[in-house]
Length: 331
Ligand code: UFG
Image 1 (cartoon, rainbow, N blue to C red):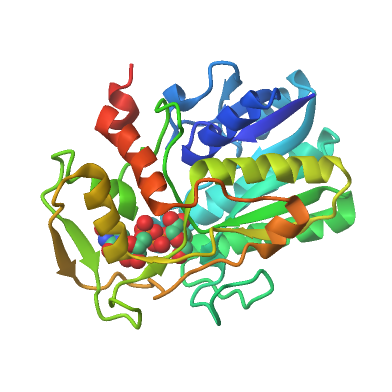
Image 2: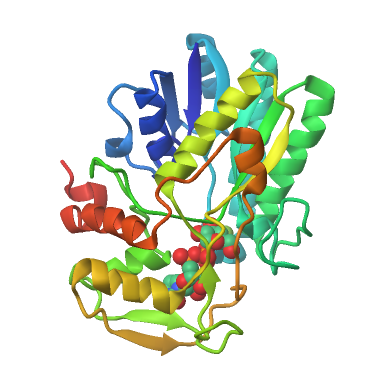
């Protein structure tokens, strides 16, 4: 039986496909390559280029492949863009998921693991955040992910499709092989932006605000290695295959680092001075986001294996140093 990975050419999707194939699974990848990269798709995966909003295309893939479970990464995920163009997010994230669910129902596929986000919480009511804490997204991106979770909940009641929603905190790092890594355009994430400085593509890194109520005034985030996220998807598929009930899990290390600590660690890893400037705060950035992932540890048996910030940044640096222009220059 095959696992269908939607968005398997994207950052977290491609790393998950690598782990699944290393685990001996048969994989089919669907991606429209709008933000994903064909070069990131594992050569052993069967690739179908197309859009999840195209129901004829999706139906064909379901008919061709014997699909046991779906892992769904195919979504837009840039917070600022979601505020400027909210309907793009409603269309791709919510309408896309609706069409996917219709295809799953029509083709008798009843298990799905799905990417959610810490953005569903908005400004957290406490730290560390647990899954039952208040969800009040501060942006359209988080709102669409929360709506997708709710869509799964109601669809399960009518059609018995079980789901696992994985709420990622700050995904980062790159595959140990050095063959795949993070390549977004535009890049908005802290670690790849920092590494553009030693790569000669940026003169300094901007620190968005230094008067937050944290130990050094800069925002605290829970940075989690993309391979640890990938492994959680494999455990989640196994959990559903073993008749586990639908559920939602946070995925983070449970440890927070400030922006300044991340920059300092990158200086150590790269040996570059990496100048930084204080800039105005970015709208909608909570001061602190740290996950409690106790539930994923207890129920899925998940344990992050690359939890040192130095190791995370070293893996990202290996990728960015070798591929300063991302996948464009990898062939
Ligand atoms: N930051 C800077 N300078 C930069 C870029 C980022 O200081 O040039 C800071 C941000 O203000 C934030 C931290 O670095 O405090 C991390 O920022 P990222 O953009 O890397 O990540 P976010 O925490 O904003 O976003 C992550 C996920 C989103 C998710 C969000 C939930 O990438 O998908 O958490 O809040 F929606």
